[in-house]
Image (tube, rainbow, N blue to C red; front, side, top):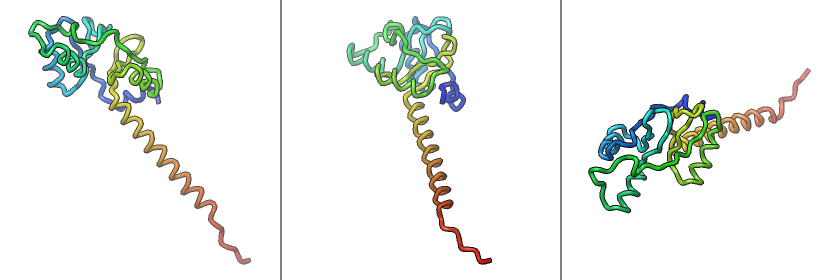
Length: 155
C-alpha cells in the first residue's frame, strides 16, 4: 500500500508553527490539538524543522526548565527526515527505526501534505495482518470444502 492510499484513511491536517514562535505557544498548540508533532515553517511550504513532545522532554532534561524567551527554533529537530507520498508504507518504517523518530512528514513534490506517526504505521500493520489472516481463512475453508469426498451417485 502506498502512503497516498494510507492518507486517504487518515486525518491529514498538518499543525504548523513558525520557528520564531515562543515555546509556550507551541506547548499550548500541542495540548489543545492533542497532537505530539508540529511542523516548523515560515511559509507552510518548506520545513525548517519538526517539534515533538519528545524534543521538549529532551530539552527539559538537559536544561531543567523552559525560559520564557525560548523559541521553537531552539528546540526543534532539524533537518527533517521525510518520505514521499508515492512510497510504500513499509518505507516509512526504515527512517523511523534508523533515526529513532516517531513522526515523519510526508511530502508530495517536495511540499508537506501530512505527518505520519508510528501509531499510524502500527495501525496499518494490524489492519494488513487482519486482512491477510481473513484471506487465508477463506482460502483454507474453500480448499477444505473442495477436498471433501463427494457422495457416490447411483444411476
